[in-house]
Length: 260
Ligand code: 0L1
Ligand code: MG
Image 1 (spheres, rainbow, N blue to C red):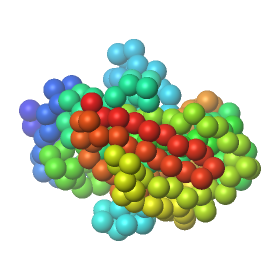
Image 2: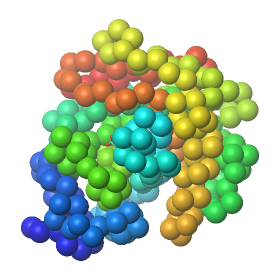
Image 3: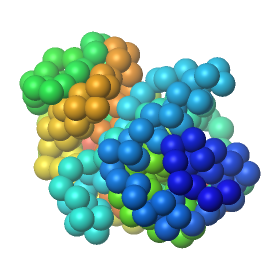
Protein backbone atom coordinates (compact mmCIF):
# COMPACT_ATOMS: atom_id res chain seq x y z
CA UNK A 1 0.00 0.00 0.00
CA UNK A 2 1.51 3.34 -1.03
CA UNK A 3 0.44 6.17 1.24
CA UNK A 4 -0.47 9.40 -0.48
CA UNK A 5 -3.58 10.57 1.37
CA UNK A 6 -5.34 10.55 4.74
CA UNK A 7 -7.34 7.36 4.30
CA UNK A 8 -4.40 5.25 3.10
CA UNK A 9 -2.30 6.66 5.95
CA UNK A 10 -4.96 5.61 8.47
CA UNK A 11 -5.17 2.15 6.90
CA UNK A 12 -1.38 1.75 6.93
CA UNK A 13 -1.01 2.75 10.59
CA UNK A 14 -4.02 0.68 11.67
CA UNK A 15 -2.65 -2.38 9.87
CA UNK A 16 0.80 -1.91 11.40
CA UNK A 17 -0.68 -1.73 14.89
CA UNK A 18 -3.12 -4.62 14.44
CA UNK A 19 -0.50 -6.91 12.88
CA UNK A 20 2.27 -5.74 15.27
CA UNK A 21 4.46 -5.08 12.27
CA UNK A 22 6.59 -1.98 12.02
CA UNK A 23 6.78 -0.01 8.79
CA UNK A 24 8.73 2.78 7.11
CA UNK A 25 7.98 6.45 7.55
CA UNK A 26 4.85 7.83 5.88
CA UNK A 27 6.90 10.86 4.84
CA UNK A 28 9.11 8.64 2.63
CA UNK A 29 6.03 7.79 0.53
CA UNK A 30 4.17 11.07 1.01
CA UNK A 31 6.79 13.85 1.16
CA UNK A 32 4.05 16.50 1.19
CA UNK A 33 2.71 15.27 4.55
CA UNK A 34 3.03 18.32 6.80
CA UNK A 35 2.20 18.71 10.49
CA UNK A 36 -1.32 20.10 9.91
CA UNK A 37 -2.23 17.24 7.58
CA UNK A 38 -0.65 14.78 10.01
CA UNK A 39 -3.08 15.97 12.71
CA UNK A 40 -5.90 15.29 10.22
CA UNK A 41 -4.56 11.74 9.82
CA UNK A 42 -4.43 11.40 13.62
CA UNK A 43 -8.02 12.64 13.95
CA UNK A 44 -9.21 10.22 11.25
CA UNK A 45 -7.38 7.39 13.04
CA UNK A 46 -9.13 8.20 16.32
CA UNK A 47 -12.49 8.64 14.58
CA UNK A 48 -12.07 5.13 13.12
CA UNK A 49 -11.31 3.69 16.57
CA UNK A 50 -14.36 5.40 18.05
CA UNK A 51 -16.50 4.17 15.17
CA UNK A 52 -15.27 0.67 16.07
CA UNK A 53 -16.69 1.08 19.57
CA UNK A 54 -13.72 2.45 21.51
CA UNK A 55 -14.36 5.28 24.00
CA UNK A 56 -12.29 8.45 24.22
CA UNK A 57 -10.85 8.74 27.73
CA UNK A 58 -7.85 10.98 27.51
CA UNK A 59 -5.32 13.29 25.95
CA UNK A 60 -1.55 12.92 25.87
CA UNK A 61 1.37 15.24 25.44
CA UNK A 62 4.46 13.91 23.73
CA UNK A 63 7.96 15.29 23.20
CA UNK A 64 7.69 17.34 26.39
CA UNK A 65 11.36 17.26 27.34
CA UNK A 66 13.63 19.93 25.85
CA UNK A 67 16.09 17.17 24.87
CA UNK A 68 13.45 15.28 22.82
CA UNK A 69 12.20 18.55 21.30
CA UNK A 70 15.71 19.52 20.21
CA UNK A 71 16.19 16.09 18.63
CA UNK A 72 12.96 16.59 16.64
CA UNK A 73 13.54 20.29 15.89
CA UNK A 74 10.39 21.50 17.66
CA UNK A 75 9.78 23.84 20.59
CA UNK A 76 6.35 22.66 21.68
CA UNK A 77 4.80 19.34 22.67
CA UNK A 78 2.83 17.21 20.24
CA UNK A 79 -0.49 15.71 21.31
CA UNK A 80 -2.51 12.56 20.86
CA UNK A 81 -5.67 10.91 22.16
CA UNK A 82 -6.26 7.95 24.46
CA UNK A 83 -9.13 5.51 24.33
CA UNK A 84 -10.31 3.01 26.93
CA UNK A 85 -8.50 0.34 24.90
CA UNK A 86 -5.19 2.01 25.80
CA UNK A 87 -5.80 1.65 29.56
CA UNK A 88 -3.73 -1.11 31.18
CA UNK A 89 -4.30 -2.63 34.61
CA UNK A 90 -1.28 -2.41 36.93
CA UNK A 91 -2.38 -5.71 38.53
CA UNK A 92 -1.74 -7.49 35.21
CA UNK A 93 1.54 -7.73 33.28
CA UNK A 94 1.89 -5.54 30.22
CA UNK A 95 2.31 -8.16 27.49
CA UNK A 96 5.22 -7.21 25.26
CA UNK A 97 3.96 -9.45 22.43
CA UNK A 98 0.81 -7.33 22.20
CA UNK A 99 2.92 -4.50 20.78
CA UNK A 100 5.68 -4.00 18.20
CA UNK A 101 8.61 -2.71 20.31
CA UNK A 102 7.04 -1.15 23.39
CA UNK A 103 8.80 1.26 25.71
CA UNK A 104 7.61 2.64 29.01
CA UNK A 105 8.06 6.09 30.52
CA UNK A 106 7.05 7.63 33.88
CA UNK A 107 4.44 10.36 33.53
CA UNK A 108 2.56 12.90 35.60
CA UNK A 109 -1.18 12.39 35.09
CA UNK A 110 -3.95 14.96 35.56
CA UNK A 111 -7.56 13.85 35.94
CA UNK A 112 -9.81 16.68 34.82
CA UNK A 113 -13.05 17.72 36.45
CA UNK A 114 -13.82 20.26 33.72
CA UNK A 115 -13.27 20.60 30.01
CA UNK A 116 -10.10 22.41 28.91
CA UNK A 117 -10.28 24.47 25.78
CA UNK A 118 -7.97 26.91 24.01
CA UNK A 119 -6.84 29.32 22.78
CA UNK A 120 -6.31 31.37 25.92
CA UNK A 121 -5.92 28.44 28.31
CA UNK A 122 -3.53 29.38 31.13
CA UNK A 123 -1.61 27.52 33.82
CA UNK A 124 -4.24 28.71 36.32
CA UNK A 125 -7.03 27.34 34.08
CA UNK A 126 -5.34 23.93 34.02
CA UNK A 127 -4.99 23.87 37.81
CA UNK A 128 -8.63 24.95 38.26
CA UNK A 129 -9.86 22.24 35.89
CA UNK A 130 -7.77 19.48 37.51
CA UNK A 131 -9.49 17.28 40.11
CA UNK A 132 -6.49 15.05 40.89
CA UNK A 133 -2.84 14.59 40.07
CA UNK A 134 -1.48 11.04 39.99
CA UNK A 135 1.64 9.07 39.06
CA UNK A 136 1.46 7.22 35.79
CA UNK A 137 3.26 5.23 33.16
CA UNK A 138 2.83 5.51 29.43
CA UNK A 139 3.56 2.62 27.09
CA UNK A 140 4.71 4.04 23.76
CA UNK A 141 5.01 1.91 20.63
CA UNK A 142 5.91 3.61 17.40
CA UNK A 143 4.44 1.97 14.37
CA UNK A 144 7.65 3.01 12.54
CA UNK A 145 10.74 0.85 12.22
CA UNK A 146 13.30 1.54 14.97
CA UNK A 147 11.19 4.46 16.32
CA UNK A 148 12.56 6.42 13.34
CA UNK A 149 10.23 9.22 12.22
CA UNK A 150 9.96 12.85 11.22
CA UNK A 151 7.55 15.08 13.13
CA UNK A 152 4.54 14.58 10.77
CA UNK A 153 5.03 10.79 10.98
CA UNK A 154 4.81 10.69 14.78
CA UNK A 155 1.89 13.13 14.87
CA UNK A 156 -0.05 10.96 12.40
CA UNK A 157 0.82 7.93 14.56
CA UNK A 158 -1.09 9.46 17.51
CA UNK A 159 2.19 10.42 19.20
CA UNK A 160 3.17 6.72 19.56
CA UNK A 161 0.30 6.15 22.04
CA UNK A 162 -0.06 2.49 22.96
CA UNK A 163 -1.05 2.20 26.62
CA UNK A 164 -1.19 3.95 29.97
CA UNK A 165 -1.44 3.17 33.67
CA UNK A 166 -2.52 5.44 36.50
CA UNK A 167 -1.29 5.19 40.11
CA UNK A 168 -3.52 4.69 43.15
CA UNK A 169 -2.57 7.88 45.05
CA UNK A 170 -4.69 10.94 44.20
CA UNK A 171 -3.35 14.37 45.18
CA UNK A 172 -5.15 17.70 44.81
CA UNK A 173 -3.28 20.02 42.43
CA UNK A 174 -2.73 22.62 45.16
CA UNK A 175 -1.13 19.97 47.40
CA UNK A 176 1.83 19.18 45.16
CA UNK A 177 4.65 21.30 43.74
CA UNK A 178 4.87 19.55 40.39
CA UNK A 179 7.94 21.48 39.26
CA UNK A 180 10.03 20.16 42.16
CA UNK A 181 8.28 16.80 42.54
CA UNK A 182 11.09 14.22 42.44
CA UNK A 183 10.88 10.91 40.64
CA UNK A 184 13.02 7.80 40.54
CA UNK A 185 12.56 5.30 37.72
CA UNK A 186 13.55 1.79 38.81
CA UNK A 187 13.99 -1.26 36.60
CA UNK A 188 14.09 -4.53 38.54
CA UNK A 189 14.62 -2.55 41.74
CA UNK A 190 17.59 -0.53 40.46
CA UNK A 191 17.33 3.22 39.96
CA UNK A 192 18.03 3.89 36.28
CA UNK A 193 16.98 7.55 36.05
CA UNK A 194 15.94 10.44 38.28
CA UNK A 195 14.16 13.69 37.45
CA UNK A 196 11.72 16.26 38.76
CA UNK A 197 8.50 17.48 37.20
CA UNK A 198 10.46 20.39 35.72
CA UNK A 199 11.63 17.90 33.07
CA UNK A 200 8.18 18.38 31.53
CA UNK A 201 8.91 21.63 29.76
CA UNK A 202 9.81 23.42 32.99
CA UNK A 203 6.29 23.07 34.45
CA UNK A 204 3.75 20.30 33.66
CA UNK A 205 0.77 22.67 34.11
CA UNK A 206 2.27 25.11 31.58
CA UNK A 207 2.98 22.25 29.17
CA UNK A 208 -0.67 21.15 29.38
CA UNK A 209 -1.92 24.73 28.86
CA UNK A 210 0.25 25.05 25.73
CA UNK A 211 -0.96 21.71 24.42
CA UNK A 212 -4.60 22.65 25.05
CA UNK A 213 -4.05 25.89 23.15
CA UNK A 214 -2.48 24.06 20.24
CA UNK A 215 -5.39 21.59 20.19
CA UNK A 216 -7.81 24.54 20.36
CA UNK A 217 -6.20 25.90 17.21
CA UNK A 218 -7.24 22.65 15.54
CA UNK A 219 -10.80 22.96 16.87
CA UNK A 220 -10.31 20.32 19.58
CA UNK A 221 -11.14 20.53 23.31
CA UNK A 222 -10.12 18.15 26.08
CA UNK A 223 -13.30 16.86 27.72
CA UNK A 224 -14.20 16.87 31.40
CA UNK A 225 -13.08 13.71 33.24
CA UNK A 226 -10.27 13.14 30.71
CA UNK A 227 -7.05 11.51 31.83
CA UNK A 228 -4.24 13.82 30.70
CA UNK A 229 -0.74 12.37 30.37
CA UNK A 230 1.23 15.57 30.92
CA UNK A 231 4.50 14.13 29.71
CA UNK A 232 7.40 11.87 30.53
CA UNK A 233 9.98 12.86 33.15
CA UNK A 234 12.72 10.61 31.76
CA UNK A 235 13.55 8.85 28.52
CA UNK A 236 11.48 5.75 27.84
CA UNK A 237 12.99 2.30 28.44
CA UNK A 238 12.21 -0.84 26.45
CA UNK A 239 9.81 -3.29 28.08
CA UNK A 240 11.45 -6.69 28.59
CA UNK A 241 9.33 -9.71 29.56
CA UNK A 242 9.87 -10.58 33.24
CA UNK A 243 11.15 -7.14 34.23
CA UNK A 244 9.46 -4.75 36.66
CA UNK A 245 9.30 -0.98 36.31
CA UNK A 246 8.60 1.38 39.20
CA UNK A 247 7.87 5.11 39.11
CA UNK A 248 8.58 6.38 42.65
CA UNK A 249 7.44 9.95 43.31
CA UNK A 250 7.69 11.83 46.62
CA UNK A 251 4.09 13.10 46.82
CA UNK A 252 2.34 11.18 44.04
CA UNK A 253 3.33 7.78 45.42
CA UNK A 254 4.64 4.72 43.65
CA UNK A 255 3.43 2.67 40.70
CA UNK A 256 4.93 -0.67 39.70
CA UNK A 257 4.31 -2.53 36.46
CA UNK A 258 5.58 -5.91 35.29
CA UNK A 259 6.18 -6.82 31.68
CA UNK A 260 5.06 -10.24 30.57
O1 0L1 B 1 4.88 10.43 24.86
C1 0L1 B 1 5.92 10.75 24.27
O2 0L1 B 1 6.71 11.65 24.66
C2 0L1 B 1 6.28 10.02 22.99
C3 0L1 B 1 5.99 10.91 21.83
C4 0L1 B 1 6.42 10.30 20.56
C5 0L1 B 1 7.89 10.17 20.42
C6 0L1 B 1 8.37 8.79 20.68
O3 0L1 B 1 7.75 7.81 20.23
O4 0L1 B 1 9.43 8.68 21.32
MG1 MG C 1 4.56 10.03 26.98
